[in-house]
Length: 247
Image (cartoon, rainbow, N blue to C red; front, side, top):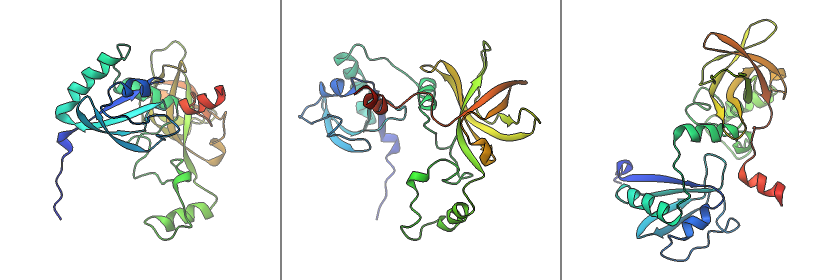
C-alpha cells in the first residue's frame, strides 16, 4: 500500500450564514438538493462548483448554518472569487471572528480546550462515549472515572466580568476561589463574544460542586482579578436551535 500526503495540494473555504445554501446553489454545475433536511449535519456531497470539483461537508465550527468546501488548492482562489460574484453581500472573516463565534456557541477547540491531558468525560464528550460497545483504547480508564462518580474536573463555559476594561482571557489564566484565593482551575481559551456582547472563556474547574451553573470564581488577567461565573449553557444558541425556537 502506498500512501501519498496531498495536504499541501488541498484547500478549504468556509461558507456560513443563513443564505449559505442559496449562495452555493448559484455555482452548481449539476443540480444537487442542498436543503437542510436532505443534506444533513456531518454529511458530505461531491459537487462541481464553477468547474471545480469540491467535497462539501455540512459542518460548521462556529455553530451557524453552512459548509466546509474542500477543493484543490489551485481552484481555491477562483472559487473564492466566484462566491463573491454570486453574492456581493459575502464578507470575509478570519481566525479571531471564528474564535468569537465558536466560544459563544460552546464549541471547544482540539489542541486548546481538549488535549491528550483531558479524558472524554472531563472534556464534556460523554455523548460520544459508548462504554458498552466492547473493548477500545482507554475504556478501562473511563470505566474507573464513571464508577467513581464522574470526573473531578470538567470543562465549563465561563462569563467574565471585565467591565469597561479592554481585556479578555486567552488561555492558561488561573481560576480562583473568591473566598480563599486558592487556584481551583484554569482557562483554556477566551475572547469577546461579538453576538453575546460579553467576555467569554472556556476553562477546567476542579471540584464537582463548582460545575454548577452560577458558581462564582475569579480569574487573573494581566495582574488583576476579575469575577467569573460558570454557565451550564453557552451564551448563544446554535443556528439550528434558534430555528427550532422560532418555528
